[in-house]
Amino acid sequence: MFQRQTSGSVVCPSCGRLVGVQEPSCYNCGQFRPGLWGYAPLINQFGRNLGFTEIVLFGCAGMYVITLLGDPSAIGGGGLFGLLSPGQRPLFLMGASGAFPVFGAGRWWTVLSAAWLHGGLLHIAMNMMWLRQLMPAVSQLYGVGRLVIIYTVASIVGFGMTSFMGILSLPWPLQGAGFTVGASAPLFGLFGALIAYSRRVGTTDIGQQVWRWVIMFVVIGLLLPMVDNWAHVGGFAGGYLAARWLDPLKEETARHYLGAFVCLVLTFASIVASFFHGAPFFQ
Ligand SMILES: [Zn+2]
Image 1 (tube, rainbow, N blue to C red):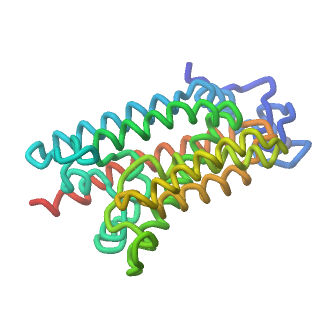
Image 2 (cartoon, rainbow, N blue to C red):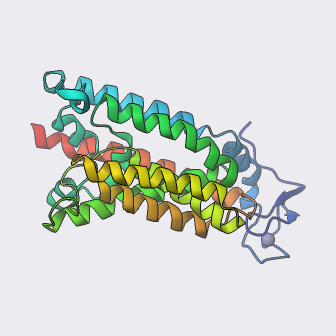
């Protein structure tokens, strides 16, 4: 199964032409080691079989349960939005983001981990419902490797932006977040990616539909003070720019799968780092 290919040809990860797996550089575009030392087919296999939607749905559900069980006495029950909300401590420990964790506690890597945490039952249910619809759509248009990259970049830009805006003392609704969690930053990145696709291909129907959703969320965000608008704005911008850079009209290649793998490893590392860095705060 985990075998290097030592003969025959592979698709160049840069230009998409067939090249010999042993070639030191692509005859067509000059890409260094287009066969990735024989591992290109393995990486392609990993990419094509990657079920990122399932990873996100089960990952978020698992992290939600962990943060609930982390401090059962702190589980909130007040009102629709407070229903089954995990305590602040387990959320901080597992990697909540915002001005306080990022600038106050130096936990800059939480721009990755925060997208896997949720503040309540309604919060996670809403985000998972939207992601379950949109992730397969973006995966179909961009391929799963580029979906992972778009998702990750949107999370970084979204939580980075709201954390930065959180240190400026702006009045609501312009204020950033002091403490924030949720997959809606990358969800807005998917909106951005769909709009980028629509513009790239020159079709208006996808774009119009997505803009309707975005406007609906912006209106909700201006009505409900607990919505993190800057995470949405940043996530949208990050997803849109990443999607433009990853040009959906070009074939997905081993290079994208490699990028996706790096994103997954960094995301997992951010959660582990959050836990080990955060544990001494509570001793
Ligand atoms: Zn090439």
